Image 1 (cartoon, rainbow, N blue to C red):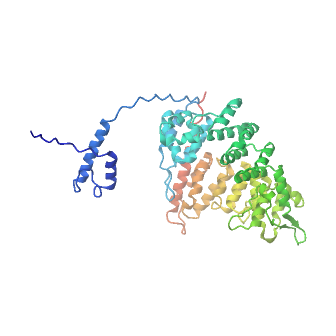
Image 2: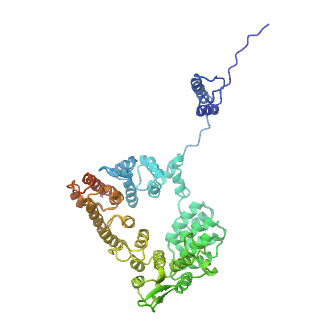
Length: 541
């Protein structure tokens, strides 16, 4: 008795096999049981459709997951309605400004978001929950926004970040997720967190304690110092910059003998920032032996005799023996000694002269650049305003800088040691003499909003550039800074610059129209910033 053969269905291809075939192309590979040819692509799609249905139908129901806990409450007051609408507009504008060329008159809203967040954080408002996803997306795309954005977003953003891998940066940026730093009276909690917490939690704890109880923070660090990893010791040691004082000296002196070279260098730097420390005194003696006033010349001149060797004592005190490529060993050692020596000792060593008089002295044998650059670094490290003023020099000097400021970056760092008002006056005088092309870095260290002298100097310099007939694009960086940093009250002064000026014979074609657009955008942005601050004002009682 013969049996009728039963057709056996060909096994369905594996899903991964179908994906591989699609990536390679049916010209190079065909699904199982399909001959090469014009029908292969259709057969591949048919097989994929069948496999998709089969995968969905064969999916076994998973065990029900535990329901997420509700988001924590945010005790801060909600944003005023107008400010909430403004935040939604700022977050919706994700295009950003163009890199150059014609930008039109519309403000760059995304560039105003950092300023808006700073104002909202100052006033202590909580964000609307519906805007948290957009806020986290904005912070994900711009790392500079993250500290202010996460502070404003509050605990609900951390709760939300656990459900979206794209927002996990919030959990990394805030040590331990929602872990709070123990309060000032919770010494036991601080000790437990220091001994049991994750590295990021311990860094946050040390920074918070250091800002309010420097001695207690250092005590925690000393209690586990011997068992910490070298890279962790370096990070922890760096936190001592906050609240650095004479009480830290014994611990830092011990760190000079650390196994890690980077830890030793950081300890030496911190000790040299304490002019009364023993290390600073040792470096002052070494530097003083290298620098003296030569009275045998026609005019008193600073003579320099750089060290001939880097001995073990110098290395222990943080002097790096091996010079970088292109630097001589002796000049390299000299610079390190001078920048670590207390600036207050130079007046006694150099005939009772003031910093201005010392900086004005000629320096023999081409050592002036090296010596003044080291004094600049020392003034910044020791936050010495008198030496900074001397090294900055007169902002109206024709050489566009002080006698010791070898670069714009050096001048910017020196300006950072002065108070905000004096800094603004110096930068304004510099702009009045040298214009804006040299001043961009200097504007970055001025307090925001710019003080009146800086604002007037910038606007006047832009007006002069407009009258010169060139295109405004070379000033786009300064114009962008002005949009964010000018005091909004300056908007009224700019109305006269909105009109298109008459085109001079030697002016670039159409430059007047471009300048008019740039000033319109500046005025519109300033008025928008003023409105933002008004919207964030607390409601009247």
